[in-house]
Length: 467
Image (cartoon, rainbow, N blue to C red; front, side, top):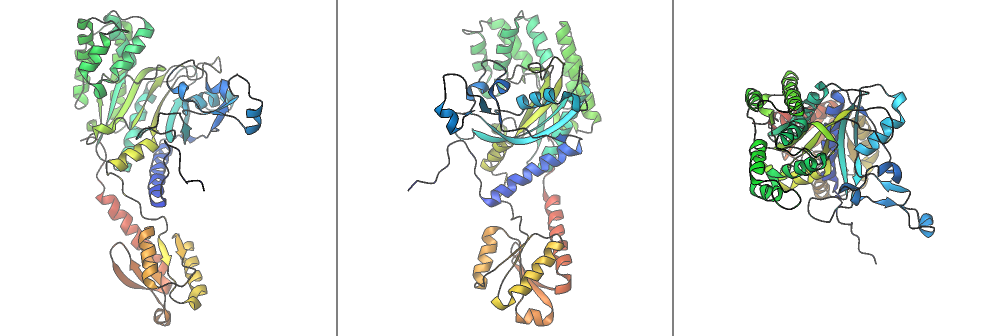
């Protein structure tokens, strides 16, 4: 007999956990659509030559190739024809290039699907996981104002998720590259290596980063490394402080000055979009590890749980689909790693098991009343209430235990006495209370109870935004 088990690196949830996860996806989707983003789905399997457009890179060394059993029999030494997508950005590039003449630009898309990476098995790292991305793609150009819109989307998403105070950190890679030019680090490849290392500052600490920058492979002098570390330690607290800290940087190379100007414009637009100034700040250590980011970069962290790290990140890129089309398609986007975020929030005790999506269980006290109970269930469903019916008569205690374990809030019961009086007995499993409702008013009365419960829950939730 084969032992039932899943491979390492996948998240498989029990129903009430899955409901909580689905509700997180619903919140993200709802807010993406509120800001005018359109849904796109791409195949999980792409042609390898399309997917692997770059050489090297850690992510591309984690690709899962796909072969049918028939293809395995004929397999040669070459790269398999098909592969599973490892992110949603490369498929987006292919999608936009392929459908370029059918899309309206700027093209605003959201995509919420699974991606696959051959991650080394360890806690919190997944081989199959959901990403929830938004991107705005321009044709030939894209205003910096679109960069500022994304923090507003981020703020709306995490405010509604109500997972505690958070901060959206902003930086600009032009500012970073310009500062490195002023330090004499002008080679683009060396700049990219330095930026990747600086991006690890909050995780590794200043001493470890300094040791790497002055060691083999980088060879920066201690003086240059110290000046760089002083620069990337800059953080702001409030809108005016952010502008003052940018002004205090002075001027430098044209690249540096452009980065300062763009970051200042983004900050002003973020405030105009209604994001509270306690919810965003500049952080000059943020570079993002991916080299295709060219301007604004974002990271979002929970104030009370810094150990979780970034829960949403992204940035500006100048040429999304250069491997597939001669058109210049600049864009800006963000990504939420939903699976990893959900797992981390569970570990931190910030997510409870959800109530069941079934709102009412119609109990069966007497087998002879089954047809009447089925009619009650139909009436509740017509009234917009998710309803399950017990199809076999069981002891009342067993039915209550079932509802409690399944997370069903209300149990509706009709015995001979209730039927004679034209009422339905309702047990509220959460409060442990029981009351009666006229059969004719059942659906409307339960809708009121459910809506009041939702309103109370929403009122009790902590407000989002950084404190």
